[in-house]
Every structure is written in C-alpha cells, then in structure tokens.
Image 1 (cartoon, helix red, strand yellow):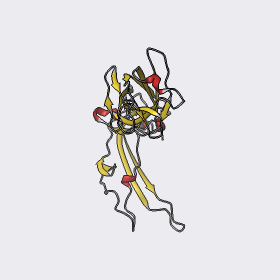
Image 2: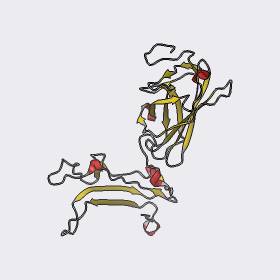
Image 3: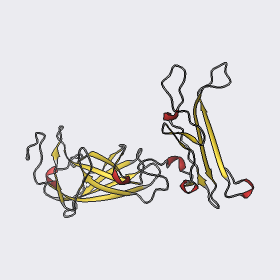
Length: 254
C-alpha cells in the first residue's frame, strides 16, 4: 500500500496496525485473531521508502486448546520474533523502495540497506577455515570412489536462503579446467556480520577427468554466490593440491 504525506507534510508520522485472522467458521463473522502487529515511523522528504512489516509465526496468539502463544504486548510495543519490542522504526532505517522488494527481504546475512557483497573462499568439512595464498589442501577419495577437496565459503550482504553457490576451478600453470558444481544450501551465521557454508564436496573427477592431473598442482578455486534478487559476487582461493591422495581409511596414497 502506498501512502502519501497528508497535506504535503513530509515530516508527518505514520502508524500502521495489522490484524491477522484464521479462516472464519461457517456461522461466524470472522475467524479467531491470530496475530497483531503495529509499526510507527515518519515520511522521508523527497523519497519513497519501504516500511517492511513481517507477520511471524512466533507471534501467533494462543488459541483454545492449543499451545501457549506469543506475549500480549501493549502499545507502543508489538510482538517481534516472539518478544514485545518497540514498534518504532526510525525513518533512516527505512529501505529505499524498489519494485523487487519482496525478493529482497533482509536477513542475518543481508541486512537492510546492505552494502556491496563480499565472498571469501576457504576450506573445511565441518567449519569454515581460511586459506593462505598457495596453501596446500588435501584431496580425498570419497566412499563411492570419487575424488574431492572440501570447500567452505563466507559471505556478507547476500541472502541467507535461496542463493546458489557455484564452484569452479582452473590450474594457473596448465589451464586445466575443473568441473562447475552448484549447491543450493542455506547459510549459517558467522562472526563479524558474515555467514558461512562449509562441507562443500568439490569432486574434480565428476565429469570423468583424471584426478591424478590435479595432485601436487596449484589450483585457483572460484566461488560465485547469486541470490534470488539477482545480486551476486565471487571470490577466489589460490591453493595447491597435496601430491598424495588421502584414502577413506585416512592413510595417504591409495
């Protein structure tokens, strides 16, 4: 819903109240009230801003015979993430309006008014571990016979969910190109405003290539992340593959 300042008063306040109801019973005027949400802000002179209001499951009210519901909040507080919090939204925190606002929902990885996206490429099966330029990483034989290295990635200002993470590689000395693999996994929160994804199995012989060609050689591993809004960014790690393969038994050299 688009609102215009009353009588051209660019500093006017805006108060929004939303009530969400369940499906009405056949004989009733309306269904049970499930959620109440309020918000207060101000217009911004000369700009069209977006006041984003989320209706969250954590704020559903208790229904007869159902589980405990959200707390009952008293104005100027409202239920946000299951807790009573102020419903005031400073005008400087309002997002600039864009037609694709619905695909650009802020989250823990991509806050409102996010800056340029950042992608950092590392390694790790159970966590993100940074790599130094030229660092040696181990290639492993998988349980089904493929050969892979573990890739992990950190990102900032890209969506937490619905993003596609693509991994590719090339040997800088020979020009040998590795496979292009894509993953659609959800990122988890990390330190410093970043989010991370680890345990990405980059199998170098998934397309039938000879994995021996990668052993003991430098490899530039590139990761590109593209979210549903169309925003994308890439990062590169310059590593060296260990000369010996790590077998499933944990013994080098199969």
